Length: 292
Image 1 (tube, rainbow, N blue to C red):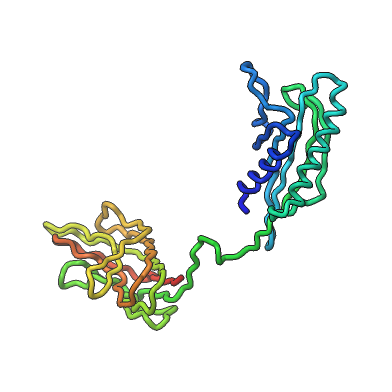
Image 2 (cartoon, helix red, strand yellow):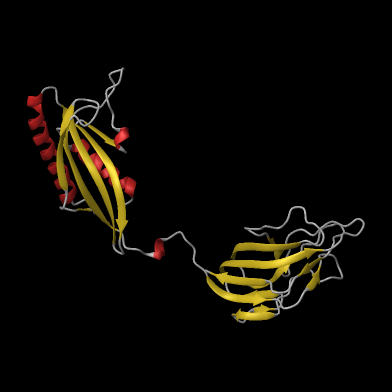
């Protein structure tokens, strides 16, 4: 049961009580009061105030204050109104506790206080502080958070010149294996099974001088060998306007659902239909591969 469903359940219980006329929810400043248009609460009025949420491994506990109030036109009315409000509070808490269609546990250590003229309207009533525990065992099976296991961690030990045009290697090389599931080979990864993968690149690069007619390379992609499929990064800080000789610290991530096994080139500069300059892959870059 969600928090909204719980509040809706409490409101429904109030509405089912034959003596109660109106329900509200929020902070004390949200309580309806009589204004110049004579708009205000219908009495007896129940107002629910949230008071915090706690949880343990097996349940979530929601705390509330419930205020029941009635117009007190004369001092003689106050005591009866307070007495009635206490009874209404008991009715509501009992209904929630013993409702077999409701999986919450209304805790019995509630406290009640009576009041008079607490709000702008001349009212009296009672306030109960109580808690409702909802069974809610922690379980990652239903979590929308995707978790990954690291299966490859490789680094490069030397500077390398790369470029997308023919005659220069366009794929980053990582020659030092820290973690290897057996499917990494210098600049490519053989996907062993379909599933959800994450690729993370941390790499310093330096863009080299443009020759006449050249443009800078576009950002790295993951290429699927034997096809024209290229996977664009889901997170990228590739510079929009590179400057020659400046070291750029790239941090790029690919989240990919792979539906076929095969060989991936990691990571390649796509060849554009124009002449392109080169860049230098600096030593001590890092590539990590994760699988869900």
